[in-house]
Image (cartoon, rainbow over all chains, first blue to last red; front, side):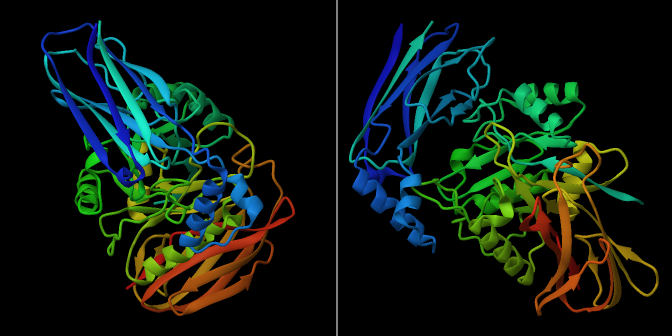
Length: 146
Length: 321
């Protein structure tokens, strides 16, 4: 059953921030599933991307030519998902996937997450904005209890 | 006490973060390259550790549990465990305290790829912590990725490492492949010095003591001797004064790491805060009488690998009191 649905928007100014969204589970479950989607994954504006790459290299004291800048494309948004149980950090999915499902339970958890009992209490998802390049990135997390 | 040096990979990822290897595949690849052991440093999680430990045991490898704090301000490899620290609270105002906690609890904590290009190409990839004193850290990843000594960001990291040594920092120099999958290519390894059969405790101790060098494959035997016959290992503290430095370079161990490549070591660089000396190797050997002044004395070896001119090896300095 769907326990919690988050839809939020991240913008470039939110880069380098952690955004915590708590939710309450009122009974125990066999496992939790987190369907995590965000879009767009890539910064599609090629000219903007090239300018960002060149500016980036210049900021670090390196000059690059057009071909070297091209080699860095595409630039991507990267927003990772962490889950907190009532006891603390349950795990982090540091992945580049923009559409993924993660499971947490006592006998199986997806890589990146600890195995644990699903107990009643306050849980939370945290979106960590490693890179938000697009003007607007829409992130959705659906939490299911089985 | 006889210190021997063994090749390790200290920066590797699996599917527990964004790597392409299962832990078993990572261990199998480490074994196929004849490394002595490896550390698992998945991004912001250590859930792969029990699987990697089991796989390492199956392959007869030394395994070092770890994690890579992959933050917005820099990446840090933590070796020896994850120490129960929530990576999300690592920021410029907390990083020293958390690093000190790891070090005090027997772990190693070091700056990964300090000069890599950062946001938005590799967010947090560059050391932007604003750390002024690295006393709470144990190591510094001066080489990263493939063909490391030809990579401009590593050349910059090497220079920064020496600048930190000149300021009094004592950090083991390490290499990290930042291995996310695949094999082949010209990679390096961190050689860690230990007494007796290698294990993870000794590997961590080697990093803490600075008994390390990074190498494309050749092995370094370096002995710094004072007039009394006392000998010093790289990474050790020695008094200012007259010394004899004896160096011999050996090819990779037979069937060992990068043993299929042709190495031609040509000259040794001796770096100090006062400058550098360049000494040609003769039959892969060198003996120098030198006066060590307060600061540090660091060795590097240049030459050719498979015909390509490259820096072949960089060692953690001797620290001169």
